[in-house]
Amino acid sequence: MLALFYIFIGIAIGVSFWQITRIMNLRDVIATDEDNRKQGKYSLWFMAFFYAMMIYCLIFMNVIMLPESASIEGEHDDILFNITFWLIGIVQFVMQFIIFYFTFKYKGNKNRKAKFYADSHKLEVIWTVTPAIVLAFLIGYGLWQWNDVMDLSDDKDAIVIEVYSQQFRWDARYAGDDNTLGLGNVNYIDINNLNTMGVDMSDPNSQDDKQVTELYLPKGRKIHFKFRSQDVLHSAYMPHFRAQMNCVPGMVTEFGFTPKFTTEEMRLNLEVIEKTNGINKIRMAKGEDPYEFDYLLLCNKICGASHYNMQMKITVVEQDEYDKWIAKQPTLASVIK
Image 1: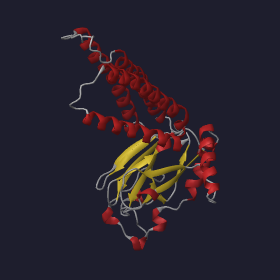
Image 2: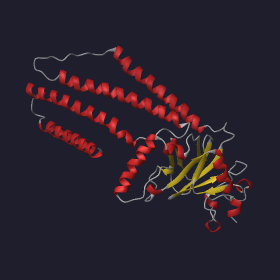
Image 3: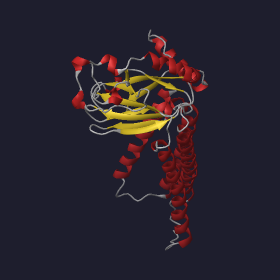
């Protein structure tokens, strides 16, 4: 089906160039009524093709969409996306019909005179005020959601995790029992002593921090992420949680979210099962090992040659399983000498 989609796109582009070429060649030619009738019919055919493509994309291309948000905060992102999508879709559907139908209905005719309207205050008010109200609502809702994700002042029970980026890998550091991360700076990096994240070990808060290469998150608990970069600009992207934040060298950025589905629960999601089966069908045809769904932390900035491979596995579990896992992780004080 994807090949058919590309064929449609290729045909549409080809027709567009053909029409542009014809227009350039007909600059000094006056169109006849027969030419206008043909163009009117072409507009109806193009409208039918355009709507067929829209319907095809709505039915068959939704497989590329993400499943339901895996974080509580991400639910509002999905709501905002759906509102925007349907608003744009309905407006486009109606406006495209009007454009193509009017092109056909009011095609050139030497016996018809065009009507001229100097202005219409009512129309000006309608097409100015209506979009302004809609945009104000969308921006206001998005700003409220942004503040909900960024304002972490009231989350006293949140788990604090530092995500550290470098070309081309991620590391993470969990705050210890004091739930406070020790200071970090690239100047403290000491590869020989395994201090790869540049943690200031003279800071008492660093002693019980725990460095890991895989993220474990408890379901239903707020996670307070802090981001640093060792070298270039990276972007921590967790698509299933609807979360993304730039990792900027020389400064700390942060946000928070609350996971609502464990990894095992998400693997039972019907959309995830369908996508997983589709992926494994392709992998089996290539003789590759089967794929199993996992949450991932990706880099959404083109940060270098191996950017595509900069990933970290995220596992969401119940609170008791998380407690057992974090208790097994060694503290920095026991690793860095």
